[in-house]
Length: 154
Image (tube, rainbow, N blue to C red; front, side, top):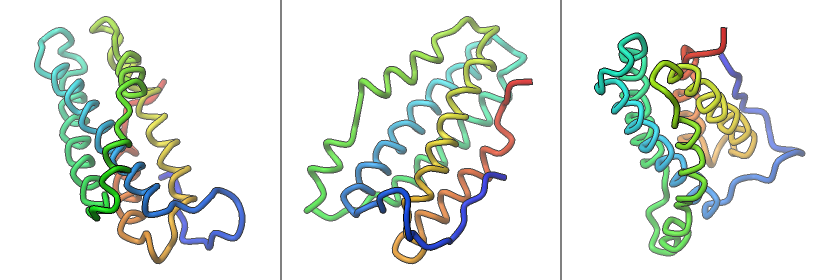
């Protein structure tokens, strides 16, 4: 499993602020929901029965992850603007464009997308405080463990 430690943040990445958390977690919600929708559609469209079960499983897990990340988004009215500004449809469209492939290439297309999500989460782990961000670190560990069996290149 990809490691997330509780090591102190002495050097390295900039710690995540509350406003940064609102931004980060909102984007993760958007990404997980969009990926879950796409993979869920693939699982039921009948175009590639070989990948349908995997896509259905990933869709269900990503839907659950979206809920976990949503629970991490701070609800303060002071952060409403940060939450509203967090959605990035251009970036989300670019990620989803990576999945615009023929049915037979779906499994191969999802690999780099999920690998990118995992790499992003590992980087995010370095920015989370072991104490103040403990709930988010727990979610991050759960998501990484849940994606450990994701499709990979052979």
